[in-house]
Length: 189
Image (cartoon, rainbow, N blue to C red; front, side, top):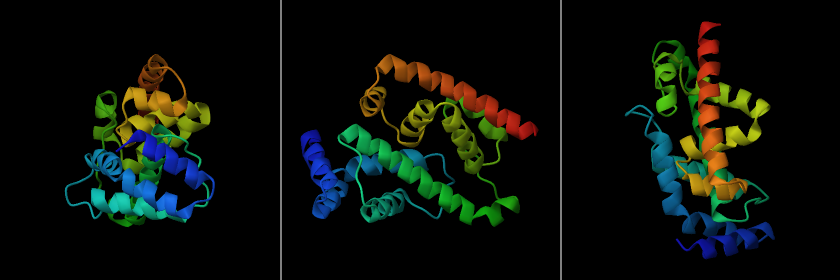
């Protein structure tokens, strides 16, 4: 994908061009599939959503929304990561009854959270901790969304947030530690 093409489309969409919004999904499709595949990698093998379905559900939500706030590729991919996470959260909530019957899927939040993920309830537990982090440090929660859920590189996250790569690396490390503590605290409650 040509980064310039996506930026042009994002600017056209921001100015109200509905056709450009559809073209954004088409042009960014391979990146969106990569993000979806990264998000689905920790899901159970028999998950009812595929990475393709996750991309399509995110695209539907994107196309239904009125405004496009992203002005470059990195910001759009950050949006897509968040939107896909929300799709998975909604899906997990609708399957809550099965989880309460003991059919829980445990997810990992990178190597720093492996120990907690083995004991954590499920994706919703990680989401709850991430929502708490957003209340304390919004940028760190955005970094987690982009890195973990979006599979974005440090440079892409830095570009999306307009900060240095070292800031992203430092806050990523701190956010993982904070989430680990939050998940463990919640498990003990």
